[in-house]
Image 1 (tube, one colour):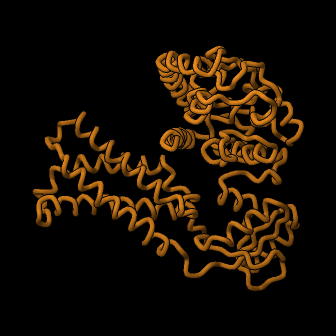
Image 2 (tube, rainbow, N blue to C red):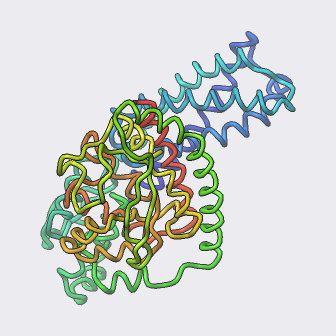
Image 3 (tube, helix red, strand yellow):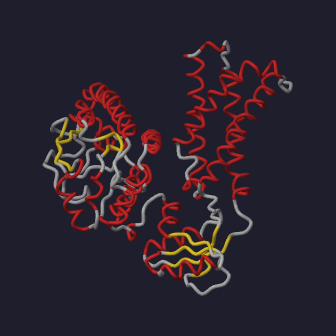
Length: 434
């Protein structure tokens, strides 16, 4: 029903693979001056097939299959250029470290960069916008009230790539074939009657979740948590997640040992202060845990209930770089290895701030029904005010909470892998724009 969802991702994926394969054919044609025959193509088929898989994975990690990038094409050109440059670098390293294919395509890779950029740009910027836009949109009614309903109404009606258009927010309209309804606003008998009339009934929370990849907080209740969070995670998922955490924690530990001397020296130019800080935070089921981080602020004072912009303790220049690249989080490898936190999960809060948020937001403590993480679904999706890498207000925290509850509902090894790749992408592109 929505072209911005899985159908759009599959269409983009198919077009990307065709563009990458056609780029290889045209590159070999340019390199040798004649259309390549099977004997010319044969040495390149296996290595470039492997590279295509890696490149598509890089595309995915860079967010090139996300709904947001499809709906905001102004960001697309820069992302495509950076991603394809990274892909060519991967290809150069691939042929350097794996020489078993018997080819050293330096000239071909240079030509391929130009040709593939041209075709990818042509596909993504010129062709895809035309083939993805529906020529007709199903008419729908939105029977829900509140800020989240207004948000959904504006988003869907403002983007022709969605397969529906809200033409009314009232029930009595014979022109609508779909009714998106907050079920608490209609009784069961009315819903059943509409179904018998041939109307397609869609739950408001399902539509909102599909469009925004987060849970509408207005729909939460005890029944929602019993249905989506209360059941225990499968053993195979927990075992795999724990193994990944241990391996990731060891890697983080090695990186911490490697960069600690350089961070210490850099800090000396900005005044005195310890290299590491300790913070008391909330852990699984609200337990108290002590986490370790590189100091990123001017003074090492006990963490309070304040946001970063409140008070006089400011982020240092070194600290700003550490936060931008998430390197300030790496000393938490100790907590990851001990199992107090995971690599992936809802972010843990400092005690004072966590208490303040729990008092202000209903169901906030439900975030701790799973083991908290260093990165999570909210961190790869939410956009903060310029200069911030975390929420700095109650309103921003509401959005983070909506993403956290999406993770609680859909948590799985597959979703964790997606978060991991997108976290690496965010670190890379933050660093590239430093």
